[in-house]
Image 1: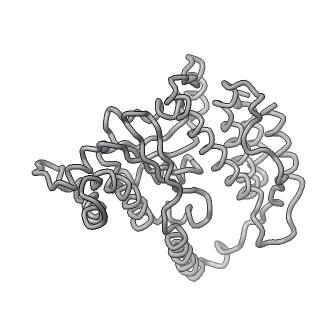
Image 2: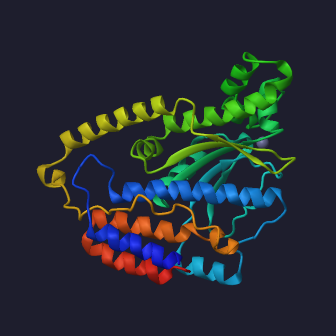
Image 3: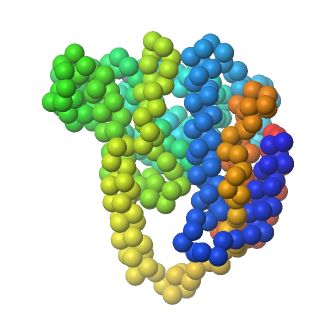
Length: 323
Ligand SMILES: [Zn+2]
């Protein structure tokens, strides 16, 4: 069923196009579908984890061999805390090769973390970037309470300090740490937008959606925060920044380099195509669903950029598909 669905998307996508140039292209629609279906998959996985009904997908011996041969294609990049009670793959009931996880105390976006997230978003092409804090976070608590710190810890905690100060000045003292944990999620999203031109550009173009979350270490439940409360402003600034960069690039480019590459027709996606699989499908199949989407959207993106390579890549995507 999934293979047929994937094939339908590709056949429709490669054969049709929308006349309105301002309308989303096929790959943009597919990316959006991928963002929705991946988030849905993670939410469903967390529900199973909370209820003690995890499937433990993609942990077979064959999965390791498959990924070693084909390379990794994770469906989401996740910035989370190193706390041992915060095991990301388990929380979302995912397996080997499913998530590109960056773990660091306080889930801060320092330079190494930014570089790693950039790799996940721009090189591996994950359409989702999740910044996830957790309850009773020691790093955030240290920032709030002004704990005495040694070694390299002060530089790490300094990245959390703005959120801690905001939390202290905004609400009851007894809820200061939980408030700081949530504000720290947004603080790190702001750091990503401020310091990573690559992720900022991908976000502005809709290639990645950045979502906040807080994990409750006692219940196992993930509280989904959605996008940053001021996401419109952040994206507007990012788009403006991208336009400035584009203008500079166009000015600097030679006429030959500036020659646009002729793209093939963008894909058309039926509006009523289901984003998530039918609940009548086996539950285990749902847990493995996004891989076909990822391969499909990448195949279409490649087709738009370089028609001659796309045929090869599309065929390769089908060949390596586990479905
Ligand atoms: Zn923590």
